[in-house]
Length: 325
Image (cartoon, rainbow, N blue to C red; front, top):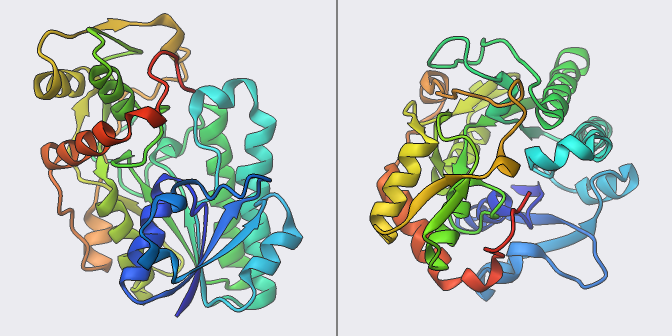
């Protein structure tokens, strides 16, 4: 099968591209065009992997480029998106253009080209603070940030194309993913890079919210398992461990592993507006385990260990002295 991965130059997308190649898929990688010919994290993949990847440079906001990229592929894994919540507070227009219009471009092209499978990436942020736990796919949606609102909009567009035109869409909803190659706008690399840089005051926002953390290899295998099952067409499916940890507890664990002399301080700049903070995310994974053969393979402790090792060798790629949004 020949598949396209949008957002392949990013964190999860690069891992997905790599794993698809290893599994024998013919992979076309859609990367964000820039004049430096920078392919993001794909530039760090082994030569043996990249020799089997067809790179297409474009912009997910451009319908013509998206259609050109999707010609000749059997399936598309649509991951391209703007994801940083703080940046969405002051630049919501770009999130509408990228997350909603970009998804529409993929859906329109898939309908025209009769693409056999369309995998649309959602986020656990669409649920907002849990109204009950574990959060299953029937949980109400709540747009607590412009980012989450645009992802809700993209999801509902995807659903409408399945219901209106019979497009073989699946909405994949990973809970918080972490691991090698993640940017410092996310909490785990934020903590680890500060600790590895020798800082003893670790700046964070609120410490009380809880999250359900997926190691990136588990997330990627979830995508592939969902794609390889015909039972998942027309469904919305969580990828979750069904375990939660608070940000404060997470920071304590990383301090224990890296530098016992460090302590956490609250940085007001990093606090979300009160009504925007998602206070609890704990996902239900019953549906994915019922419809596929997926189950999480990595414990949080094991995943953190791999992430620390990666960041030790790549600390020069991270700006530890600023708040990365």
